[in-house]
Length: 377
Image (cartoon, rainbow, N blue to C red; front, side, top):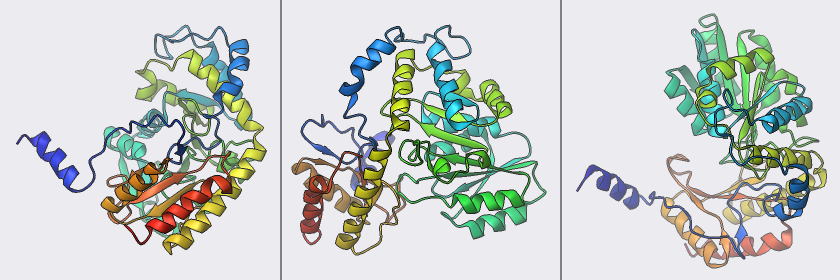
């Protein structure tokens, strides 16, 4: 047996062998994607407006941002984001590109990164690719973070603390206010916040948890993505003018990737405009998320820990997670199992992602099915 076959066999035996889902989604309730504002379901509503306003948007940029002559829409979107945030913005092709690129650019001599242990894999990959010096602190444990800072204080020119505002697997929030307090105690600390799962769904205009808490100016680098609530593709960084210039000149995914097509950027621009006025949808999403989370807690007998539209149903076992997902699929519900290495051993789960157009009537059958499955699987 070849080494590749051995690896695949081992993954299969551990119930960790992944396959690309082949569901079309037609006629099914999707509780697995990140379409938090349900804009992906409503794309046809905006088609005519998009074609009227952006009919000139090309289908290919044909070069990187540093070489392309087709980036008027890129510049317009960056200017719009800068107006919203009050800081310069820079587009990236994806959230993965943004985190790998920003971490690499910040990996200057005498830099130390301190990351929450549950930070996204793209940040970890960026740190490893750049050969960065980094340490991790237990999830949301600011006491341990302080201990690391006290121990490392004075040894580095800059220390970059990296967290997510909403964590992608547990749906809980970073203690951003406390992190800002800590940052002010250590002048060499920069605060880097990934708002991938908060952009669109938190804050008066949907700019994220940093807007909701009115702390945008206290954060040195904010990452947002367009492939989730914004129903598009790409990502962005919000930062100072100097840091933006550093990213343009040293972030390798930005420099060496063909720019995202203008047509996608134009669609993103329209979606972000829509997001800024979707206060009703954000309120409904928050309400329906609380309803679903509370009922999941009753069914599972454990707290979800979620404070957002991401709600985990912990099975603690990969085979059970697969079985629950299969039973849901038979009833027309897409909710996929999450296993190692995405979550640690014992953290296997179904990760439910809710959308703003969902109602208690839509979700009640899901909860009833989970209740019935509780003693069967």
